[in-house]
Amino acid sequence: MTARIGVAGLGHWGPNLARNFAALGALEAVCEPDEARREAISANLPGVHGYARFEDLLADSSIDAISIATPAASHGALVCRAIAAGKHVLVEKPLCLDPDEGARLAAQAKEAKRVLMVGHLLLYHPAYRALRDVVHAGQIGDLRYVYSNRLSLGKIRREENALWSFAPHDISMILDLIGEMPVRASANGGTYLAPPVADTSLTHLTFGAGTQAHIFVSWLHPFKEHRTVVIGSEGMIVFDDVRPGVEKLLLYPHAVGWQGNLPSVEKAAALPIPYDKDEPLAVECAHFLECIATGTEPLSNAGEALNVLRVLSACQDSLSRGEPIALEATSP
Image 1: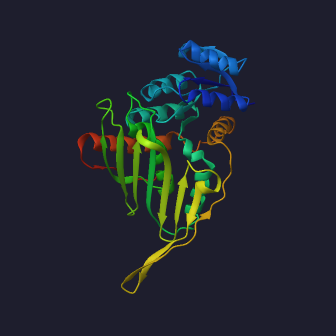
Image 2: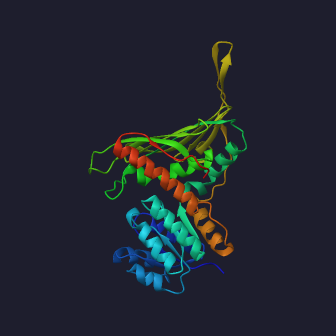
Image 3: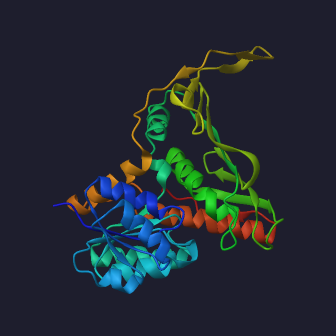
């Protein structure tokens, strides 16, 4: 039997979760204090219960799991309450804002035998999954460098900076690709609109095997850019999520090396990498339901989310202190 889902928060992202869970035949209720937002969902999804208070959603015994899409600062407390009420939880990124709290939530979910999953959406993107398969199959050789740009004009926030709002997606992909935690994080940024909230940040990560990565995020950019570039010893891959169709995921089998004492660069035509066309959020929501039904660990489980949170926290420390931060190099 399909688990019954309650979606908490109908701001920017919650309606998308509600739509996908409804399409999967799993949406039971929504929770949102703003009456107009609740009524808008009720008009589009008749038969779905609407609650103004989170405690009323938790008290609904017909609901097996809660999908939380509220501001990031509220995530930790709401996840804790939902697990304590016996519900499985899918929470939008980040899991919470403090690694120690994240560790407590992971332990709480494990003890309660509840699924705790975090919405690191790009791990479920079919194009990223295809990229990952190519990299892990060794088709571009040894992994040398990854960079990711997540840029747009808005959505500007006051409660969290651009690092916490945008970078969790990129950190989750980078940790998944490289397969280990960084040993060093260095970040700087710019604050222009609502000090001390940073509107831009540039983060550099160093890994024990010598692999490097950087992440540039900003909501003060003239156009939308969501691009991840992976550089290997035998090829390069570009995942450009703004581009359509075959242009979204391209393999560049360029050869760079030396001929004697002279550098040699052999450029090659880009080759499209095939990928499924499923909506990433639909894949994520279906995965959550499957994990509840089978008891299997989600791809973006509490452990994975905690590693992302630890990297985010180190980046924030570096951003605040103006100096690099050392991390413990462990496997994700």
